[in-house]
Length: 451
Image 1: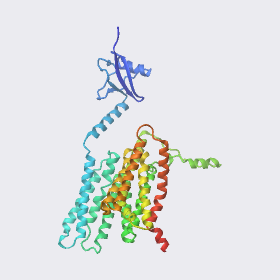
Image 2 (image 1 turned 30 degrees about the horizontal axis):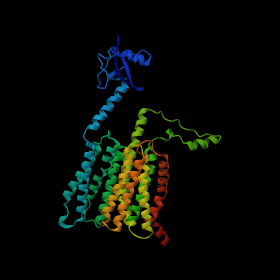
Image 3 (image 1 turned 45 degrees about the vertical axis):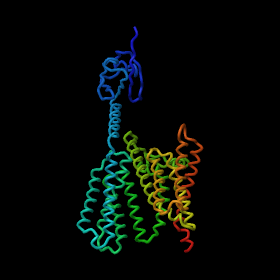
Image 4 (image 1 turned 90 degrees about the horizontal axis):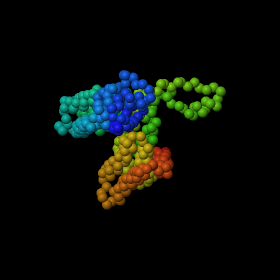
């Protein structure tokens, strides 16, 4: 007499296994046949819906064909977490909508502050209205900082945390006194340091890698604005050099992402080689115990910092490109230096992220190149048909062509080793020459020659 076979799937710590057993086989017998040992009575077996499957339940009768059995509490918990993640991903993108709403309100309040600071007479907003708007911005900033969610993805965290200091900038712009001698400089300084103070407050409140990245970026912007206005540093030179430094910082993202790992957890091979030749070997602290929780925390922090740093670099590139393009459209050594810098920065941003771990880290720099090209074309004031407009369109088309070539070289089977090596060499060369070309574009060489 033939006995029908029933197909079931077992999921345990060893992985996922599809088996075929005779109908009427108890779950206990199936597990004992798989492990070769007696199965304890307290083993947890459940289905994908969370319903428990007793050890004496019969396959084919109590459990139908195609049933997936989760064996062990750890597997059951992991499956429940996966189901929760899927349900969360299927919901509307509320963090992104919240971040967009906050950015919109911050930009409106910031524009209102600048309008009030630059107007005189009756057109200027009265003090109670400006104080109320500043209080609204500060209250919204405090509420967002207190109610910040720690269970966001790196992209959601970056889009939520990094723009929040704009509310601090709006607060500073709204508090500019009416009798300021230089309203533009005063508004710029108060806006910059308002954003810097807000970013530092967020970092003290959240203590996250993304908040630390935002604090460093906003305080750097405030320091540069102070240097330009107070020390009378040429604005174009600062912007051109900032473009090169921002693009070069993308090469340091892997090292910066693991900056939170303690030194005793890393193996310094150069120190080991140097110590092995001597009589006295330096005392090495024993590494801390490696656990799954620590590994997960390190990976989460590294990914969060990588995405946040990539977002900051993208904003820097888009903001600084129009000034570099304006220099490149001129004449003389500075113009040639700016042209070379734009080409090298574009190559670096297109080539270096191709081996990044996450999809966001690969896409952000290339989106920055496209956005920078569009902003530069629109801000240059060139009309279609002119040589300048044709040059800008050619640069944008060349960047798009390089992106398409990179995409097609990675389609299909394994990536080409030859193209990969060529990209590494070209990216290293672009990173090596980007800063010297920025120095030439900033006019520092001509200034030193005049001295």
